[in-house]
Image 1: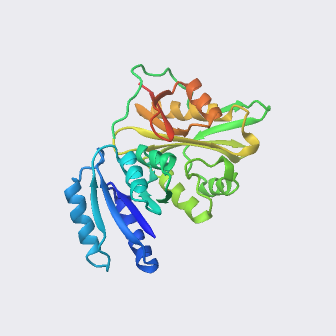
Image 2: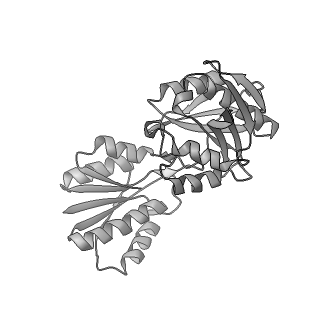
Image 3: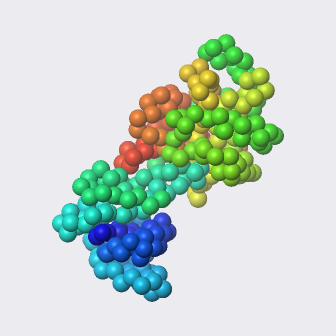
Length: 122
Length: 174
């Protein structure tokens, strides 16, 4: 299966990377990682790429890493469709101080607009 | 994360302890603090209807309910419990965020919904918060939850963000 993983640099998105890689190693998925530019994240896209490469160094995976600039949700949906990915994986659903799960704008956009099957890693 | 708050503070709210007759003629007691009988609250949440949950809370199973209540009943949070015949039937809570604001949530068990208890709980929690010097309170609510949105508006909350799945509302207390 061709999997596109969107990463914005949140803790949740790195957990999604770990989950996706574990699954891919078992199932033989081909993983492409797309780094999106999130205004609310202090890490630069280059720092995110370094972090991804460090985390993947211990695995057998060598995924294709892309950088997407502009509106994160629409760029992810666009790439997933253009290159005919089977699945788009995104992290989201951060918890508020009270424990409520909140979906941000990127996640909402992806869920509503993707023609590709979406996996949400919470 | 920066949030917006209304410019004008809300008026004064009633504070607990207090007893108010609900729309069904039941005497409901409102008291602050939830820690004098946490087990009773655990019981209340174990009986909570699945469809009345919102955004993942209250949790479903007992252990996660206990972990979640441990956070809510800690010293830096504010709680008001509504009791009927000595047993909790509703609970409202304020949890501090990373700034100086508080996030609000409110729960009323099914047989006691629609009798004005939610509004009273909310007002008594905000009255308690005023006594404690809390200035800014915010909440998120699912778009389709019209009864909850109506109660929040009636009490004085204003819509501050409509950009994500959940609506965000806020009130200034002083």
